[in-house]
Image 1 (cartoon, rainbow, N blue to C red):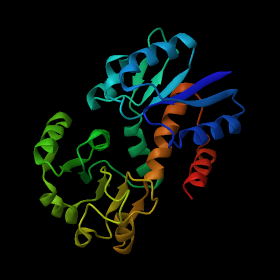
Image 2 (image 1 turned 90 degrees about the vertical axis):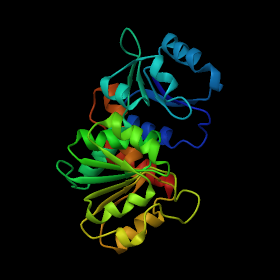
Image 3 (image 1 turned 135 degrees about the horizontal axis):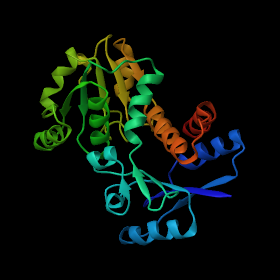
Image 4 (image 1 turned 90 degrees about the horizontal axis):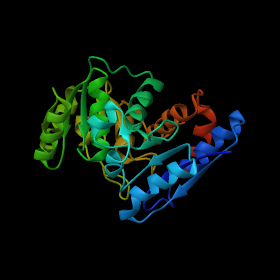
Length: 266
């Protein structure tokens, strides 16, 4: 039996176990997906222990995505983003990936939203914002990053290369954008939107990384404006799909994984 899992602190809220185990059941793979919650200072020992015990792969969540970067061989994208959320132990040394970026691009592709040559606005310059900004830029978007702290947005724009940046007062750029991604937690615990309603428009495609609630105020107002809306559960799903496919070499049963995820979110 293969063992996969998630390492983080805390991990009790995770929706990854039912999503991945639905994939194993659908394809008849003899595997289990378990959660690990080491102390914050013990992540090095946790990675070494998983490798020694023959764990096939791990997902990585807060607060370890940056710390794991120095404990594995990161692929070029993970190194550029500065965070690892997926580890493959099948090689001589653990290999690290960032599948959050694929979660972004595959979500747009699933909804038939082209990215190459489009103008995109990313709200937020934290961990999620980094993955989103790199994913969109690598897909051919002209990226603008708007963040509460403009200096942090500028630092991310410099890291991405060719992106522009500013404070939240630059969100007026959404009026002329094709793509908008909320990479902040605004809307998770309150009925708020990080983007003024009046800048939303019908030609816009909006992805909100928040998945609880599934329908945020931003998505509700974007739909009312006639925009294409993509909830955060799609991004969560497709980062998991990407991890599954890297670990197993199999095409993921997307419908089964999505069904398990949506059942937990309903």
